[in-house]
Image 1: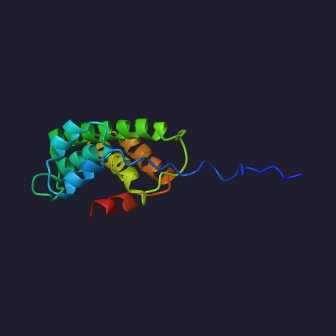
Image 2: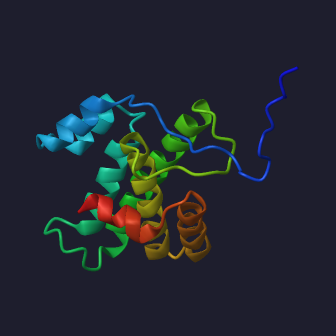
Image 3: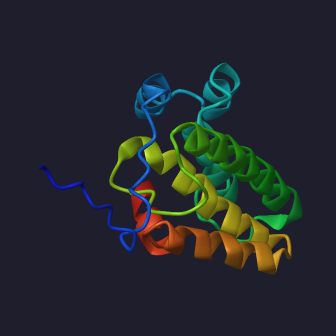
Length: 153
């Protein structure tokens, strides 16, 4: 008689790895294509929305100095779009609201970057609770805001 496999109920859910649904967005960004055009052509791409939010937060000179209200609100909208597109993709990939979303898996990085941008932009528009929830979501996903910020460098 063969023993029944035993599931480790304390191990938690397995890591979620998104499929590489939009490699053309990453390739386009690498070759300098306009992220707004890429987002329009591939609206389900979390990476395109994350880059739009990051660039808006950084400003035209890339300094990231006080973005002002209009830029902060625009970045918030871009990041929120990427976040929601990412949640949809995570659910399709089997994610059930918890568990690791590894930052070293390249297709996950667009969602994680959108989540960090949402945290930053939420703080700028006075949504402090949301800013902290997003930062905590990153930590609960097995990464940190600092680790995700290094993906942008």
